[in-house]
Image (cartoon, rainbow, N blue to C red; front, side):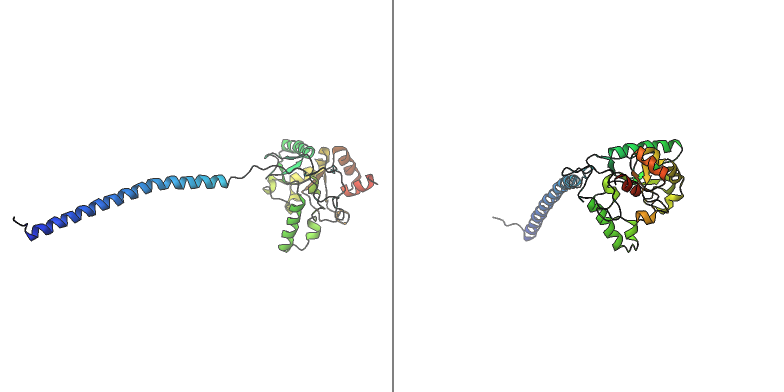
Length: 255
C-alpha cells in the first residue's frame, strides 16, 4: 500500500484543525447571541420590579386612633398644651391643589371656609394658598429640633413646642400668595396686597390672625402675618370688633 506524502498529511491535519476551530468559534458566537437576547428581558424585568417597589402610596390625611373630645375652640397657647398630645381631629380632609402648595389637611369646616375666602380673594385679583395646615405632635417636635440644630436663636418665640401648637387642632393655617412666589412663613408676606386684604376681610369667613403685630406680650410669639386660625364667623367678628387676640377672647368666654 502506498503511503501519503508527509506534506499532504500535514496539510490534511491543518485543515481538520481549522475546521474544528471554526466549529467551536461558531458555537461560542451563537451562544453569546442567545445570552444577549435573553439579557434585555431580564433587565426589563428588574426595572419593572424596581418600579413597583418604589411606587409611593397616595397621600391621605391621618385619622384618630381613639376617641377624642372635639377641640376646635381649645385655648391652646404658649403655656397651655393639649390635654392629650396624640390628639388628631376626626374630620380632617385633604385640601385641593388649587388651595394649597403641597399636601395639607384641615378640618372640613376650616377647609370649606378657606375655599370660600380664597374664591372671594380671587375675584379681586388676589391668589392665596395654604403652605401649612394640620401638624401632628411628632411633626411639630421635628420642627423644633431642626430649628435648634440650625441655630435658630429665637425658636421659643417663633415656633410652638410640640403639643402647644394651634396647627395640631386642624383649624390653623399658614397662608402664602402669588406675590411672594408662594414662599412659606415668609416675613415678606405682610408687605403684600393679599396680607392687607386678609387683615380687612378674613374675619368675614371665620379667620383671625393668631399672632398680630403689637400683641407679642399677650401671645408670647413674634408677629406672624401669615398664620390664621379658623374660629367661626360669629366669634371672629366679636374678636375683630373688640380688637383682641384669640387667646384673650377664649380666656374671657370660657371663664
